[in-house]
Each structure stands twice: as structure tokens, then as C-alpha cells.
Length: 120
Image (cartoon, rainbow, N blue to C red; front, side):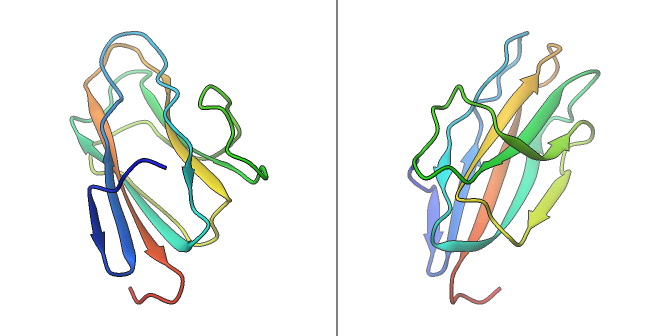
């Protein structure tokens, strides 16, 4: 799992910026959610434009899927910066994937996950 950019007692905070301009799909990296019970995702940076799309994907596979593997799309971001998605029942693995890149702005996604037994 990628190292968090900050860990605040019962929370995991990470900014996932690898969603570059151009016309390529960015598969993202699967991260382990085993000890977490809630997640909050937020698009950061410039708003997505045109056909740009960022997906939050989930998988319940027993082992970490290959990063190039796509699974269930839990939510898709299409529009404005600061778009948010909250999920309270987490799959075993999650990733952020830029599934369509029409050459729009370089937007990232921040994720905050709450650990089991934690507050807020």
C-alpha cells in the first residue's frame, strides 16, 4: 500500500496526484482497506473538463489485484473540482483510476479513511 502523506491517530490521509494531462488512461494503484471502515474521496486541483473521468474502484479479491486490473466502479467524477464521494462499507481493495482522459486539467484525488474503532 502506498505510504500515507499523513496519519492522524485513527485516520489515513493521502493525496493521489498521478492523473496527468494527455490522452492516456492512468490505472492507479490498489490500496488495502482492511483496517478501515469509512472513506472520503475529493477531487483536488482543476475541474475535470469535457469527457474527462476519474473512477473510484473497489475489489473484494483475496489478494491485491494487478494495478492494470479494473473492477467494480463505485463512483465516477466528471465535473467540478472539489467533487466528493463518501463510502461507509469498504471493499477489501480500492483504487483511483483516470478511465477517460480527454486532455483536460491535471486533477488529483485526496482520500481520508477512518480506522476501525476510531472516531469521526
